[in-house]
Length: 476
Image (tube, rainbow, N blue to C red; front, side, top):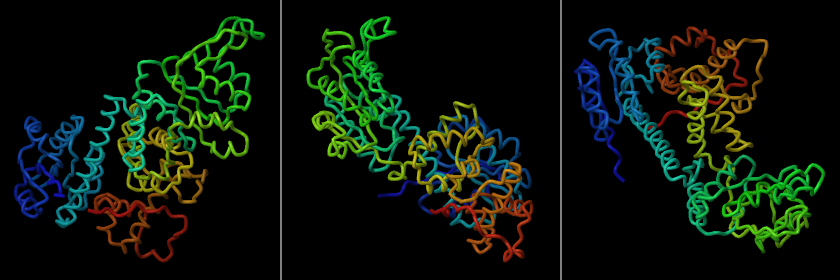
């Protein structure tokens, strides 16, 4: 399969630099150069461009910093803008940090090898393509409603989605199994939306930790005077779901006393309200869900065998998040954007160490836990990027405990120091490679080392315990 040609826009007045880059890049790249930064010309280039390389250095022959930032802001006005990579001076850490804050995905220097430049361009393009695919998935979900809010590009989820689309139009009972927090109700809603009953209501009810009498009343309703306090007739969930879908969550918790009544509804499509002899006819599709093993419960006489077979006409299993790790980044970015909109935050992405921590965590609470963790990170993050210290200690996977006698700034400083030290050690104190791994400019790394008082001469005496796992090195 032929590799996609990455189209690179080189914007800046230094034609010699742009020409050198254009000649050095291999056949996998196509370049165009414009020496002026006129904002009016950008729309003509936007559809063609995959990656923007911008030279807006204020010194030498570069364009003015103000004009460059204005162009960056104009580029970002489009809903799906290309990633921006900015040239900066090798020792200009403050400039590099400013560019990242204004929306650049990376920075490069004059001393960068052409192999490293190709790697940066490919990585930026890959990230951009992934973000566009996420937007396409969201648009498809909004337009068709086919899989509701369920997201997943992993093979196991794609197979599940295909099977759900196959059985949704068939008016059969469905049993959804899976651990707590995997999204069983979302899958049930997706099946309902893809069925012929989509124009009618879907009514959801959880059987967890409720008394039998309350569940009876909730499902079947009651007549006026049926018991003390029954001052009026009340329709139950079954009647409310007539012609639509009834979703019963945690069906394994349904008492043995109520199971025969539910079985009769499935067999005869009728029941009586509490306190009444009149038969109520209903036409509902039943979707049930459980995190328990109903087959084993049948063997232990804790669940009726005939009801189990009625419910289990078609079974769908939602895998735990630990078995679909390919979806973690997609889901995390989705939840981050939702949280940013909900809380009016400017956060847009995760740092590499933060993504690595999300990858390594076991996620016992599954997708629901991931959503809560990302929401928490978005709330406490005051910048554009979620860092690993914005994540709960349990998710960081370091085994470290917070020292509550220290301030937030001290905790952040110590974390940065440990992360940079570990990176330097793994690269043999190669500062260029360490800067690449950390995703910062080499000059900015020097500045951080000075601020954090990191010196190679003190290396033998530096502590190594309880350090954070380093994100994997960037690859082409």
